[in-house]
Image 1 (cartoon, rainbow, N blue to C red):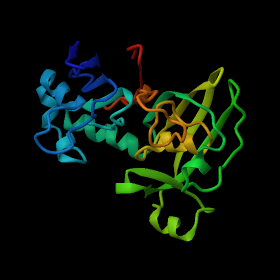
Image 2 (image 1 turned 90 degrees about the horizontal axis):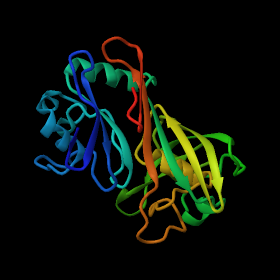
Image 3 (image 1 turned 45 degrees about the vertical axis):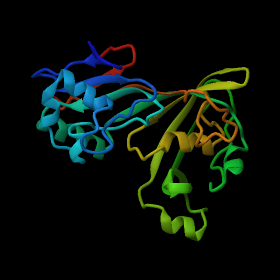
Image 4 (image 1 turned 120 degrees about the vertical axis):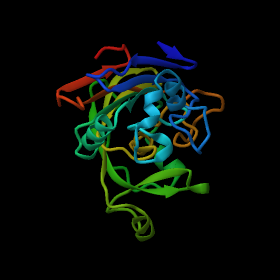
Length: 250
């Protein structure tokens, strides 16, 4: 099932009151302003009008549980009832809602220095299949119009620390494969901040291919190679572990 531009992997039912959809590159996850109809959420509402009856953190996002950056693609979850939304939102707050991203990176150990504004790199990562690391930090807005973010750690300067929040965000990173100049990484998070995964990858020297914000060597015209590939969360009614992947399996 699909509306223009999105693919529905799971339609809501009485027993499974949520939508799982695949959002393509270049499409907003949610409306930016009231009346904006060009988003993955609004297109899902054309198929399932009941989605607009759920009250979420932001009025115009209704039951949308999380977002993907406009230039990214991948899986999104939208609750179709208030009970479902409240349960899924709680699973995000308590760290039991896991999101997985598959990304193509262009390893560059000097990336953070070349971009500027980053604290010292937290680890030395060998670029080889199977290598793992975890990046963790608070975040602060950065750059013109606060359009980017930067990690904040105990080694950040005083001014950066004042601008950072108190919440620590973690990104688990695993290198899945390496081919010539590129590497494919799989990243997992439970709590998310704007641009978290992209920024953490840039920090540890694995900037995403096509990332105009966080890759110091990004060429023009490339598509951001960043895909939300899997979701794992407690079922909102039963609490059972529920998994969706880009192959469509549940």
